[in-house]
Length: 210
Image (cartoon, rainbow, N blue to C red; front, top):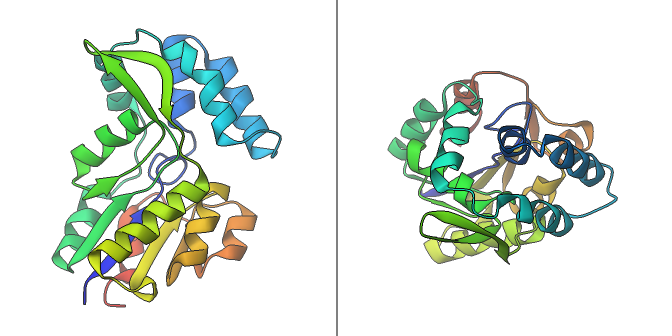
């Protein structure tokens, strides 16, 4: 039985922080990134506004510089082991995120995810344009999840979503099984089950064989 397993990135596979904060710290706009994240958490602004505010700080930043930020990003233990184990279980594994797609792509490429999504920004001559070319919201993330399942012919009852915060709620609402990983209280309430761990392999007994 083929299954779809979707993971969130910020706060889930990157524990305790977000890619926007990591990039902001490296490029000198940490305070702006942190303020945006706080307002997002408080519900004062949405992800579209966050992307619009932060985009200009990325103008002419090289993808090489972003790769260096990525290489230093904290990553939860056991990602490769989990991805490899799920592949042996005939799972299609996606990385669903609303953060910058160029950052998500680096993560997905390193660990072998089948597909991924995120907010898009163009580049020219190896440098970012500083202009958002496509916004990606939590609802878009859910659509990416359900469309992927439909394209693969996988019933949503056979789909699993793993996340930690509000951007995961629409995905959780569609998934047959949802796991709140190191999550906030509201996300725990919306999930099928919760897990607190610094080692992703502890997730496997909960989902393998379902």
